[in-house]
Picture 1: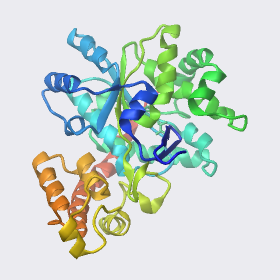
Picture 2: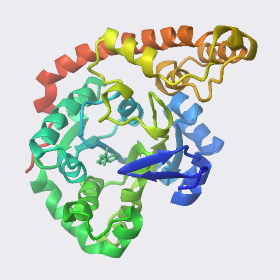
Picture 3: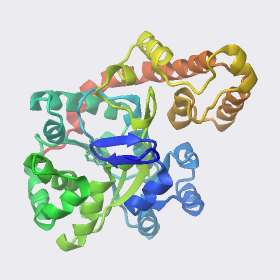
Length: 370
Ligand code: TRP
C-alpha cells in the first residue's frame, strides 16, 4: 500500500480514504446537489447526514424515487455483523434507515450475520456471534423502528427462509467473480466464499425493489448481487452509502468493534465514555495551550469534532461555531472533548433505557420462517 493509498473491503479498511477516488474505484455515483434537493423535496426534510455528506454516494437512488413518485413502494434492508457489542459508529446507517422508514412508510429488514462473523473471525465461536446478534438487535430496536413494519433476520435462525433465495444467487456467482471482488485465496474458508449469497438473500425477500442504506465497505457484496439480479428475474438492489466512521484514535480506519479502548459502545457508562474520549480521542489541537491559542486547532482531523459532525450535533449553527472557535484557538481540545462527552452521555442515557425496554419487544421483531 503506497502512502496516499487506502483499502476498503467488507473485512478490511485501512489508510486515509479519499471518497472521490473510492467512488471511481467502486463505480458508484456521488450524491449530487440535485439528488439531495430531490430527497429533501420528497421527504419534506433536510437530513443533516445528507447535507454534510455523511451519506455521500449511491447506486440508483433516483430509480427508487421515480418509482415511489409513481406510487410504487420499495422496502429497506440493512444489517450488522455481530462480532461484538454495538458501537456508536454502527448507529449512523441505522438512524438514517429509521428516518427513511418514517418518511417513506416502508418495511424494513435488518440482517444479523452471525455465520459471517464466525467465518471471518478466527477467535469467535458461533455461540458468541449468536449472542452478540441478540445484543445488537436490542440497539437496533432501541432506535424506534416500527414493530409492525420491521423484521430482524438472524442468519442461523432464519436459514429456512434465506437458503432457497441464497441458492438462486449462489448459482449465478462464480468463484472468479468473488475472488476478484474480495481477494480470496486458496486458504479462504468456503463459508466466506458462499457468504455473499446470504447477504444478498434479503434483497429479494419481498417482491419489490429494495433500498439499502449501508457503510460503503459493504458495497462489493451488492455489486455482485446487482450483477446477477436480472439473471434470477429480480430488480437490482439500490444503495445509499455512508462514509466510514473513524476510530477514536483517528482517521485511517473504521471504528473496530474488537478494540475496546478505541471504541465507544452503546453500553458504556458515562465515566467510561469520559475516560475513553479524554484518553484516546485523536486531537487536531496543538501540543500546548500557548501554541493552540496562537495557531488554532484542525477540526478536520480532530475525532471529537468529527463525531459531532457525523452524529452528535445536528444543529449547523452550533457546529459551525465549534468549528470556528477550535480553528481560531479560542476553544481548547479539552473543552471540545467536554462538549462531545456531554452529547454522547446525554444520548446514551436515553438509548440505554430504550435498549432495556427492547428486551420485552424483541420477540415481536424477530422474523419468523414460514
Ligand atoms: N456484512 C455486514 C457487516 O459485517 C452485515 C450486513 C449484512 C449488512 N447485511 C447487510 C450491512 C446489508 C449492510 C447492509 O457489518
